[in-house]
Image (cartoon, rainbow, N blue to C red; front, side, top):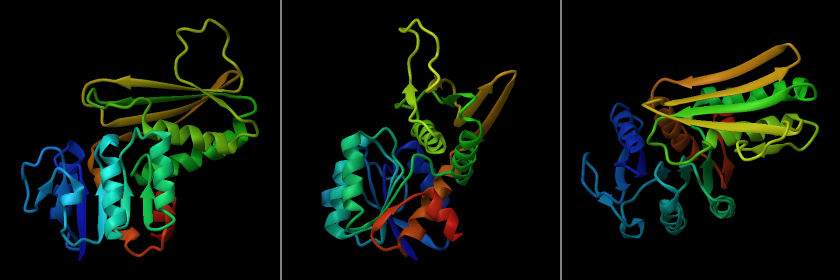
Length: 252
């Protein structure tokens, strides 16, 4: 039985993860971190991770970038493998994740869906085949409560496209202030926020007289919760290092 500490336990994703774990026999949540310490399940909730002394096997962080420092400090102090599923992190925070991965198993991904993992491989291959002749655009849509834009997944897809190209592209997020033709080396990244859209991502390859679109639609938050839980169980068997969805899919 894998014992999980859940950071962001009272947030929307935290509630979904809690529900998913309750239906599983291979893991349980033993403590939570959240600025809202109200208890909605049978485990203690701490506003400050440093106050948690509950024995556990792994941490899942699905919270807010402002909470990351406390989560990483707790992971380091208790030598706990950690799944980082929070998006919108600063470059300095990503660097701290990389540093800690030299000491502990760390799983970090901009999206916890296996489908998105496959999508990244597909767009990388498409970029290698089409990139020289096709313009590339990425469109992402999320609900109106999402804080960061563009999404971590959109940036992850842009990085995958970049790996397939023979040139170094420029990410362009805002065109309205620039009145000029689209540069060939651009990857345009656009965001839409509205309603209760769980998550939609499209990578568009626009060529002469033809357009190829590769897309993924999330119909519920549960796919991300299941991915995070599976990543946590996987991480408890790993040596120190930085892991992502590719590693999880590879061992499946």
